[in-house]
Structure formats: structure tokens, C-alpha cells
Amino acid sequence: MDAKLSNLGPIWLVGCGNMAGAMLRCWLKAGLPPESVTVIRPSGVAPAPGVRAVREMPKGEASPRILLLGVKPQKLVEVADAVAAAVGPETMLVSILAGTELDTLRGRFPQAGTVVRAMPNTPVALGRGVVALYGDAGARAAELETLMRPLGLAEWAADEAQFGQMTALAGCGPAFLFRFIDAVAAAGIALGLPADQALRLATAMVDGAAGLAAGSDESPAVLADRVASPGGMTRKGLDVLDEGGALRALMTRTLAAAERRGREMAAETR
Image (cartoon, rainbow, N blue to C red; front, side, top):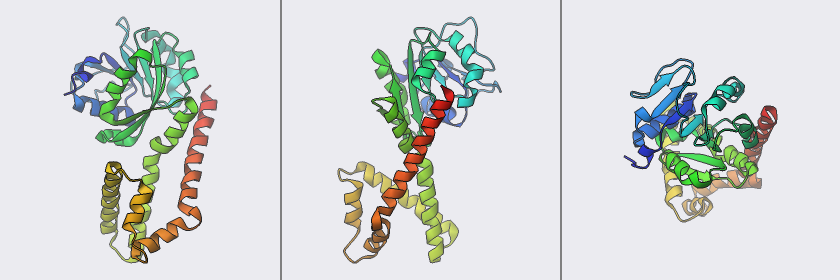
């Protein structure tokens, strides 16, 4: 149990869908006391034992120390007034709303003492995710990092443009990697492997290779070359991926498209 994590409440979650729910489960597993958490969601159903769940923002209570804004971006206008009335100078408001800029959040919630954007990716459910952070955490930066640490790697962006770039890479990245795993498995099937075996092999291969890359002092490029003997099977395969910089060009276009959509979403919510 993380003693520092146990002292962070009270924490309110406005919305508790897939991502906010995954974050909460990881925090609870790491030692966040469930009684320190209040979830505000239309169903009023508690996402975990001991967590208070209500359908509307609590009234007549002290402002939370941390409020995680986890509704869908298009729902922001529906909850903004109630959230604004609930936060105070002691509240750190953390938004995981995609495409909703810091200035927009500050304008909606001027009473909040601290406003921060966070963009987690889906592996936070395993405590092996990435969380991009940007905002005016100030003296409470260490507190926020304590909250995010159980989720995986937390990285601060220097500015909002960089936050969008980090989101395109790490926030959207798991979906791109899932596509890669699917493609590798499909290629294995084309070679003649049974579908279930090809998928098991592709998934285990990516998991193990990622672990090696994470634990190595050498770059992934060097690791790839170490696997590839001159004239061998791996080198012939790498020749296809490397030809004309095809793979790098594909990923550059992929991340650029995601980052561009993030900027479009930001313009839509201003």
C-alpha cells in the first residue's frame, strides 16, 4: 500500500466510464482508500466496493481535494455548471477530456485552484500505461505524480502542442499496436498457421519484445539489427519494412492524422 496515495482524498470522479474506471481500479489496488472516493455518474452504481456513488454532484459538502473530470467531451457542457459550483481553491481539477484545452477548462472552472490535463492510455488498467500531463500544477505537481504513479509512466508536456503530440503517440498508440499485432497474426495465417496459434504467437512476441526494449540500454533500432544476421531470415524481413522508409513513413502519417484530429477537436470545444 502506498501511504502517500492513501492521503490524497477526498477524490471525486465526474463520470466513470472505461478509462476513468480503469484508473480508479488501479488506484484502489495500489492503496487508495475506497471511502475517500465519490463517483458521480447517471446510474448511481458504485464501480467498486466501498466507493460512494451518487447520481448528481453532492451539495452542501466541502470541495474535493482532487476532482477527475472523466465524462465524454461532448458532455462537458451538461456537467460544467454543477462541477464549477462544487470545486474551490483547494481543488485540483484533472481533466481526461480529449481535445479540451487548458484555457477552455480554466474558463469553465475559474474557482478551481489548480487545473491540469491528463491523457492516459488503456494499459493503465494494468498499471503499465502512459499518462501525458500538462497544466499549472505548481506546488501540487508531486501530489499529482503520486496519484499517477500507480498507472505507469507519467510524462509532463512542455506546452499544449506537445501534449497533443504525446497524446497522438502514447494515448492513441495502443490501438495502432493492436492493429500491428492483428496484421502480424494475419500474415502468419497467410503462411499457413492456424488462426488461434498465429494470434497467440503474435501477442506473446510483441509482449516479450516490448519488455526487452523497455529494459535495454540500446535503442530499438540497434536491437533489431542484433536479431538480424546478414543474409538470414530476419534481415530479409527487415529489408521489406525498411525499403524506402515505408514503415516509418506509415507511422508518421498515422500519428500526424491523430494529432491533427486532436487540434480539430480543440477548436470545436473552444
